[in-house]
Image (cartoon, rainbow, N blue to C red; front, side, top):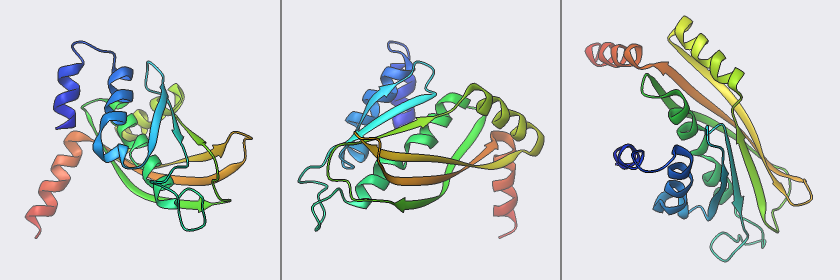
Length: 173
């Protein structure tokens, strides 16, 4: 559904605008209580904000760790899907969360892909058909204190290779 809406809206709006407002209006992302506040035109940079409020306050009075994890969960995957295009399959594979200190105020996170990273991903997928990459990002407060760090493992494959792989797996059942 989201992909179809995105393809339609691309006729009228920049990808960055669709990405930002699509996330911020999406019920699944709104429930995290986070908000995308900045998206670069090439989608290589995304910044989020997460405010402490009654919806995400835990028993100890800080931002619930699950809200932090959920707020960071879909960003890299969808960012990479949009950057790489339809010739690739991208899946979230795993996440390692490290909570460093309680979030008692507004926190921010940045999701960044460099041009060189994108070139290397395409090169590695062309050579090996499928790869895993690990991206690390941190949520920080206004004083630049690290609140939590997340290591996201993403699976990236050539779309044709992936379809054949799935056919093989289904045939072997």
